[in-house]
Image 1: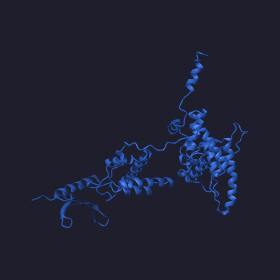
Image 2 (image 1 turned 120 degrees about the vertical axis):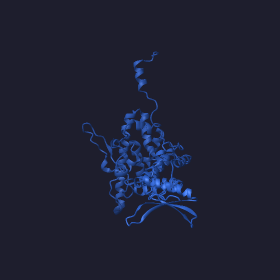
Image 3 (image 1 turned 60 degrees about the horizontal axis):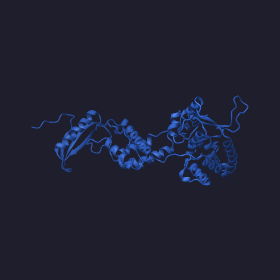
Image 4 (image 1 turned 90 degrees about the vertical axis):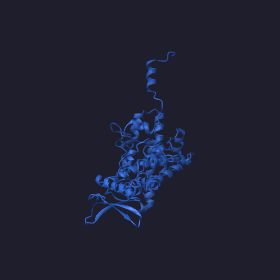
Length: 395
């Protein structure tokens, strides 16, 4: 006579409707006293018994109480909805597009916990998915996708005991396609862009002048406010204080700059002072024209009704100026004004330490990494010193 399974080890029975053996295990009770069960099945009694043994093992591990049917799609969308508090709307939109375009269609149906383990997401699944995406996407985009998936599963794992974050096992990221490399304006191109920007006599023109001549990030220039602009300075002070702008805010969440050292005061070149004076007069006319529609936010580079420009506004205005300067608009983005600032300063002989301080980097390593193509490649200090120590023998 077959021995009866011990209490708590579940049971097996034949289902006529399904024509399969059913394994059933009680894993707990609801507040109303109703049992909470988990079921599995097999074509044979042996298959069903193996499935029941897995359920029992998961119960011992504490993983059988996990939410049933929790898919990658549900976890990712839950993270997008609740895990991005404090992020800007642009960041949320970007991450949502990446998730809905690349993660949900490919991995969305995979389960984060599956008693049979046949539909459970594995590290091999993630590796294969990343390798497939690497054929079409840049390496940076692959990094973003892996980060989204890792963080979404991590959030689910904190709430559901037993979920393993298999993305943590995928530490080797495949190399994706090369992204479009950033570039900088040559001196001649910069002269043409400045001339076109000043000739257009618009908010976008003066925005371009100030961005190119100060190296401010686009995220720093857009929220720049008039109280942070000093067009006169205090030249009779000791030491003299030149006209300057205080770069103390950005469009990032909370208004903070990218790093602590990004909070900096930048002296204004003469043409930048002229541009800001033009913008102040222009804005006075815009305020009068807008009347009750004007929003008094003290934004320097504002719209016709005083509101802050968004990235798309600036991109369109900048490309209009590029066209006037004889350049191909679609080949450039506003952030490359900052790259051009670094390149022009490097060509003029400024040291990397000076440039790093001007652009608000935490240290020179960041400057070298981000702007390695814009920096003067030849370090001349040693050669100059040696020439002074050991003059040319032919001299």
